[in-house]
Length: 599
Image (cartoon, one colour):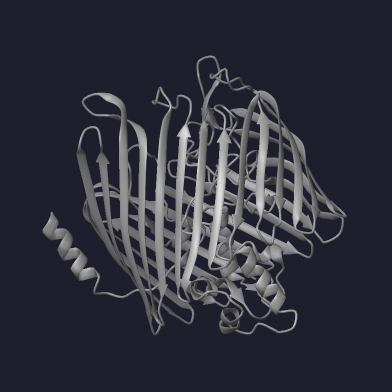
């Protein structure tokens, strides 16, 4: 095995390739298909870049690579001078690595406002015996007319017969007067640091160590995700009166849940796959409440109240089907050294997160402390956490961004957490930690990135005897990019090791891939070939058609490849196609065909 690893490393490290900055944010250890709100946002910004000469602080804050001080520098500079190119950003103190990450998301002149965007996508897998249909269909229509926006989204998963098995709809009105926004239909809330309400899809930790952990979402938005649960349905509005902001909301929607023989809720179906119509939308959830915010210069303070009612009881008696929730959030010194946090109380349980950012542009720090009691309701929340269901956790996170030289950036973080009460199979308190360091170096025509990630946690593992064991996982990753004319080459070498300390069991694996991207005029082609020899899981971020953020899991011995084509048939119509396949495994081929129209 050692000779195979050395041969692959030798062959692939001789090849040059170029950078995809989104992977830095979205490559994490989990298999995923649905795009997060941040990934959708960045894809939309790519299509309609932010004008750096007219954008306000709120628009700039949507770009995760910009710090508060970077934004302040841009706004201050353009008071007397117009920003005309990337070199201007470098002169005012934005580092070269950040500028490289920003390039696809900003412009220096006005862009065309889209009136209609239509996306239609079909996805076909190879036939499976247990599914009557392997066709997956998705469509999204967004129409803008003056201050109004109309939207309709529908989806059919593989195995489902109804073409609109899932749908979302909304009418949105917005302006800059007292009534800032009104949404009727399906929507989502994001308040404070996300304890009570936040987009459910998203990560807490990434290569952007001092920005991604802080929640910066718009408080009220239409629900446009294909994730088929935890949307809100009804009406909500955003009202601004001087320095006060009010968001009253009402929702009454159906949710798919798993019920026991007494019709009590054991869990919720978050897969979105409905093969049994009797288990679809079988629980009703009603929510109403009010979010208030007081804003004064660089400070803001919020108070939020919600009433939540499920029409079924829970099997776990610690969870109530009818309860009130309240939270308070704050941001102090938003544009200098911000301190932020949120404290919430629901079902006689407490949850809180507090953090601060400090340091100059060349050395930025983020310190974040969280405390979530067991059985705190997590249904609509998604604050910073080491797990998807964030209750029963106490932790401390420290992140740091260093710019030691003009074209060099280092991101690192240390996260320490404990689960103070029993959790799943762990019938005792457990602890864990994670360390991460990533070095990026930008050259004239290429870039280099080294990443090391180490996790150490107590985990229930069944071998000869089922018990809690000390589990360690370490990832070593080397990336190299280069642009040559219209070609962009990317190569990765990754080594992963896992170790069970108590049992002295070692496992490891190696993965390497080569990716080529060619873009000219209306045509973009992306091809990737991956080879792997591994006894452990590798999580690989891969390109896809717009609207899909995909992390695939690879294990064993094999090869995997995909090919993506994007072509503008007409000025505002783009056809997108992807095919992927595991070379050594049957029934793994996937085909994607998508048409995106923007007018």
